[in-house]
Length: 192
Image 1: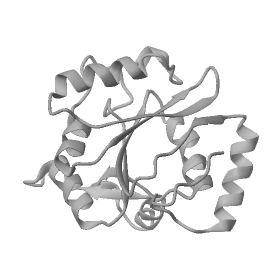
Image 2: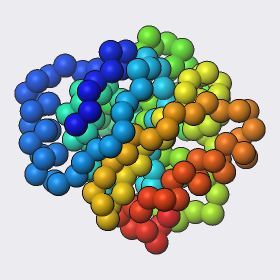
Image 3: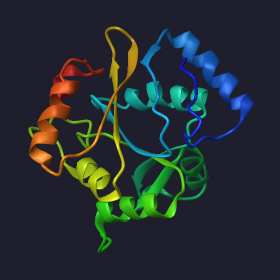
Image 4: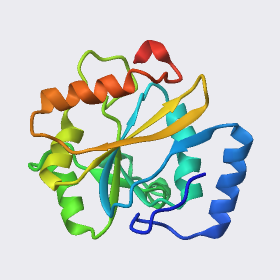
């Protein structure tokens, strides 16, 4: 497992960290690459083809002690699950808010000194023709870099890839992102 960067937003709970490390070790997965030393960043994770992506990703987040934030529709924040969702790092998003999901996410960046916002560029686990540009829009408006993180199920590898900044030309940026992620295979390749 990689070293934890100094400026990364963290949660400190050694018991949870060791339990997560044990499950990560049991799973046979490995990580490659390194984490950037950024206080604020959007983490674009793909290919997102199955709920297993969360099962693979959570032990990494807990082992490294990353305090990541993930959007979830506010309707899912019902008692008693709301406490678990917040502890994991889910933040409630009102999709019908005048600010929209993008505006709400940008506001979270503005109101937090350190924040790693985790998103799937596809926006869904189902097969789609066009990826959503919301993650590019959020990174551009919040003026934060994007870390490309992939999981490759055949090799059981999670890769902390390159860090990029948006150019403002979302079509060009999206082609670059899709080309990067095309080399990795999700749990259900038919959905990619």
